[in-house]
Amino acid sequence: MSTSTTRRHGDALRAGILRAVLDELHDHGYPGVTYDGVARRARTSKPVLYRRWRSRAHLVLDALTAELPPVLPIPDTGSLRGDLIALLQLMRTRFALVGAQTIRGIVADADDELRRVALELTDVFAAEISRSVVQRASDRGEIGPAHVPLLVCSVPVVLLRHELLLADEPTDQRIVEIVDVAGLPLIIDTARA
Amino acid sequence: MSTSTTRRHGDALRAGILRAVLDELHDHGYPGVTYDGVARRARTSKPVLYRRWRSRAHLVLDALTAELPPVLPIPDTGSLRGDLIALLQLMRTRFALVGAQTIRGIVADADDELRRVALELTDVFAAEISRSVVQRASDRGEIGPAHVPLLVCSVPVVLLRHELLLADEPTDQRIVEIVDVAGLPLIIDTARA
DNA sequence: CTTGCAGAATACGTTGCGTATCTTAGCGCA
DNA sequence: TGCGCTAAGATACGCAACGTATTCTGCAAG
Image (cartoon, rainbow over all chains, first blue to last red; front, side, top):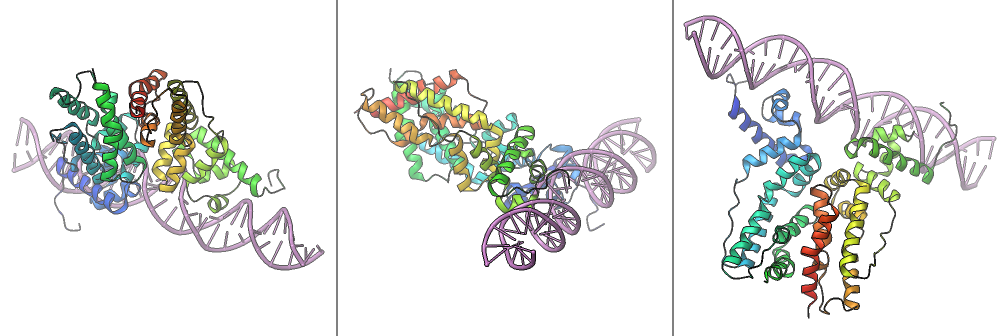
């Protein structure tokens, strides 16, 4: 047969497939990722894919998960404002690596559980990171001592995610606006004893 | 041929098609709306559909636009808090009429321009309505006189839309929480002279 | 009337889905 | 070393939907 006499197995095969998925994604976009195309590019066959992934959303999500740097370093710039801006910029960067069309496609295709995973991929625990950033500001006495609910902590990241998903890529200026006009005032006001 | 000897034209035909789209949407969900199925149900043919609509997203969006009550009445409950809660409840109602899956599907399929229209369908000018509601509160002296930016006015509707699109249907309690914990405090704080 | 044409219907080729079937390679284990 | 099990790989099938080429027909202008 063609040239190869050896046959990939297990993780090697899986890695090859995910590599092919990323290439197809790059070349044809999310809607253009097909089982046929991936099988062709990975030099394997559809049953091999179906045995491992139930849908295109699962397949693409696994490929992206394997590709993206797994952990989002929590910025520590010394001020709450700086932390928030850095966090939003990191979110935007990760989001851009994946692409809005891909995220929207996965969100549309996926079930509830997969949808949650998909959002964690780009916003890894964005709400929790926001909370810890606020906590840090509270610890250093930058803001008041009152408890700040998770909903409030996550306002900046939710506003940004909204724009990332539904509008054009936000500018640096827009990120600063979100923090200065909405996020920071609300957090400071809430934290006031 | 079957029974009809007369041929529908123009608006009559269009209305019949859109009716069929809504029926297909109801029966099979957004991914199940197909040109073939709609043509069958509307007793017409695919070229007729393709001549009028470029994609399923356009087709479904037109059908929904024709079906939904066109204008969102602006609530006036006498207080800013009541107005905001009523507005969010209206948004949730309209959104539920369409269905999260449908909105997510359209958002994923559509180009930038259509995406904007799709969101206006469920949130008709939600940001502007928010602004007018805040303006009313300012006029009656309920909040301070300082200018409240559109971004701040729209925080409640953006938070809600985020949940509508990405999570389960929010409860009344959740809506109240969004208003009381995030939206209202931020608006009041911003409006303070 | 009759005739031109937009609009309607049929039919076709193509693509992707998801699965069934069968062959073959590699790996573990005695 | 050889045996058997598991999984990879190839092929092909039936189905559904896409998008369009082609043909036909009702409608209105002249």
